[in-house]
Length: 365
Image (tube, rainbow, N blue to C red; front, top):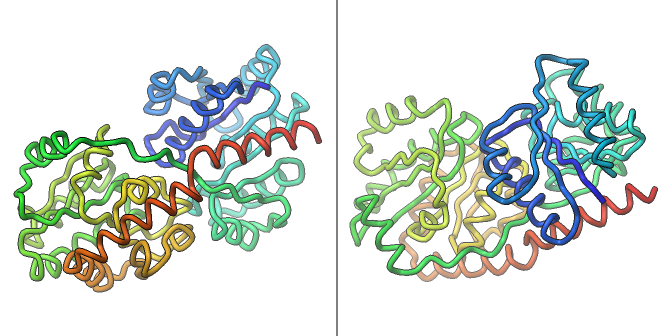
């Protein structure tokens, strides 16, 4: 069985990280996976590092005829059994190729922000759903897609994103990371990981920091990620007078080390499918304060593994962070229970097995 994973974006982002992890795990277990991209970028590099075969099929514009010819030639020459496409462009283009090749299509939707506001895109998804099998990464997203787009619920399966167990970070490495980031021994460390785009809500956690600092004057916020709001967020921190307490780290390749130094993970997003950053933080034993959006309530058991607040609620974010930083036993208990929950219900092995079973059903049908 050869699977072509077709990605709209080359990342970096949660969907792209999920694709590389899924492809690597399937390859390791004997299923041949190739990743097809419209352009080179982070995902190509990541897949190559994971020894996953990648093919770049350049897309010059909408419905570029030569792209379809090249992709169909690839599917036939490599004897691809199924196309697994991710997000709008890859799903629609992949569906056309799958129909021409006479093979199944699986279409995974990772979030709400890419298609629902355009009638033509909703119509395209309804057409694809007549023969393609859709996957949503959370129950919330499944309900949204069915209600907003009009895809029958039986054409949408939920497969949660999964993550591996958190890698071990030695105490020596943890202390080295603190020293590199100029973190004082007594400083409580909060952290947020994600691309610096408006939908991720970084501005709200910055607005909450003055309240946090009145209760915890030595607290420091780590912000890992890059994106269009980089300059604006740094200017906001300066206006709020909190720049000494915020470290803007850019894109990092050592997230496990950063998680190891954090006392509390914050996810202030305005929209989510199922956040890999949140899953990895919980797997690493970090208690969380997160917005009540998307799949977050399906991950977080309120009062046991974290605190949920309404999206954009600065006061709620601040109160949640202060409450947990002031209650070390609860902080530690939330972290332990979160790690147990992720390892039991949101593992990468579980995700891989569900996709493998779905592939087999679609190929056999």
